[in-house]
Image 1 (cartoon, rainbow, N blue to C red):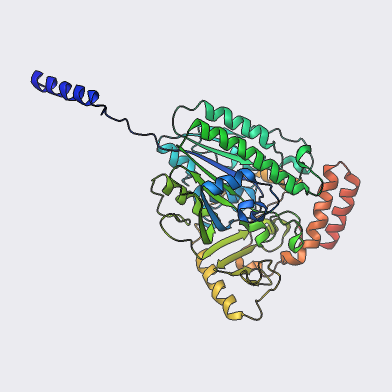
Image 2 (image 1 turned 90 degrees about the horizontal axis):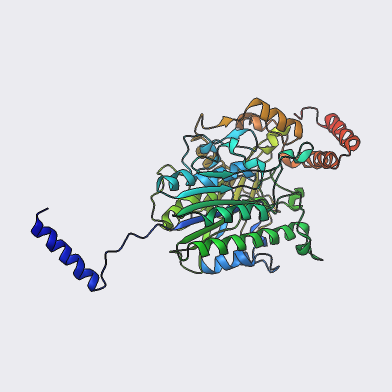
Length: 466
């Protein structure tokens, strides 16, 4: 640069500074806080109509942000559902079909890998061993905190967990030392069974499940407040559940076996920088929609091959897929479902069809009276499953699988659709599952004699059970 041009540039810069027009440094992109609350039913959240007052923190986020009214979980099991949330893919495309025996492919982009590539510092803090790094969700995270004390024996080995107080404290410590934009994923295991709520929340007339919902919300509130203080006006917070809880509906006390709304309908809220307060989106939303929608809020283009859609650019879809292979671990039939508007089809040895608008509790099976709708939805489901990505699934090591099988958190190779109709329908197997759970509960309290007795009876009643 010539001496004349240099002096002219310096003079212009001095004039700008004198006029209060100093060059601006680009603003850092928003930080992202993703909180997944395990086993949270939408109908326990005030913003979704609950009057129990269990979720003031989540309700505040909804009031200030964007709520999705009808969100369908992909799987009523923790690991495959989180794989969908973090990848934007349905299970037949990401390949993780059950807890404990599948690993997410290293070739699958996730929210962590995408945001890390954009310069975010990334940290994950999980509360249960079912999300241990060995299952592939740790890619893209600078920190993956899965330091959970494993119970040595009994039913709770795979269900080893830590309280949300511990998880949130670790996440807060990490957030406070980050210097740039961050992405923090925090997994809260309450209200997953076995329920053990804090005594101050276990008030008279409140179920143990509801008390754990309140505990999870209290942890969420503290975490959200600290994260917002760390990035005032530069934070986007997303909250979603991986699945719900049966609580006795359709005979299911917990989750995993069936595909009813009690375990598939979950809350989803996005709040913070750039989000219109009080926004609500109706229609069917997939859990897979969270990733592209969140990226859209950040101004980032999502990968083009996702099952999820950016709902900031379009209205909610009318269709959603869900599945469960949990029953295959017992030698029973897997379940697949397709939702089209208010109609819901469940493919099982004895098929089911429900009109959720008229029958939200799914008490009246319409499959015999509406065979044309059954065939129409079966065709859509079959076409979707025909796009399954072969080779996407990766099985965990034989030692891990054998250990889980011995614990009762079983998982076997899924049966193909043509063989599934020959297997026991999970609806018919529910009494057997309840007895199995009683045996596992007896083992968990060291009553081995009762556990062995019940398991022996089950061998007689269901000799094909793995």
